[in-house]
Image (cartoon, rainbow, N blue to C red; front, side):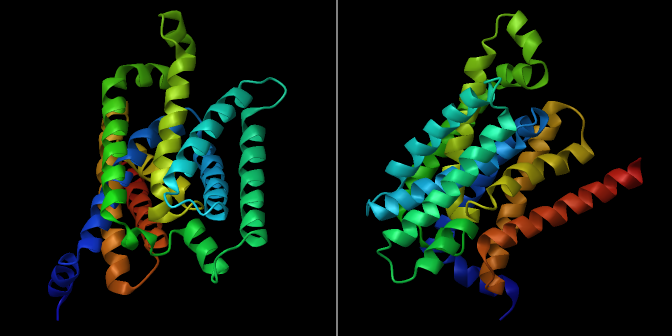
Length: 279
């Protein structure tokens, strides 16, 4: 059986189609905000919030909540708001605030899962939460619909407020001088990032989410210079890498999250080489 026949067989299963739909949408949403985060030097906010999402996941597991999203999403969004507020505090710098939240949430989450564990495979649950494992291949139709709805909202917000996000990204002081409420749009960006991170936990796990956000943006920056061109290129690269990573993980029986990130790294190296040759 050749590769195309094997792929055709796997694509006949609903759970594989669900994984591809969710993977493409998450990759697209991540890439849109990734450019803004890199340019605003907020790259580590994704890493910090991903650890917060792990802590929230642990709380949901301890409380035995049937729909973990009901706990994880509100807590992660709340921490995104707190993180932004703490970053504006002159006594606690932004990087220190991220470190406090990320390390604290990760430690408390793992502690809770150990003390109140209701699972016979704690190490497997932790590994799945941190690295994605195969959880993307166990999505239900309800989870796919929720992901589609949230992804459409994220994309619509980005497109609708594109010019404001562009202004706040490049020159926040000038944007404020022209009447743009920079704090409001920074808050909006933080909330959208929190939503993306919660969605991406099933795809790549909490420890690898930053790679999904940052690598496509950095790759696109090697090829283009304008904000719009970089954003479009980043979206295309991210979606292609997600598709290749998911299909590759199914064919080679490798972890989904790690495979996607490996493809993202390969794409970055190719873009870097193109930039070096062109220079």
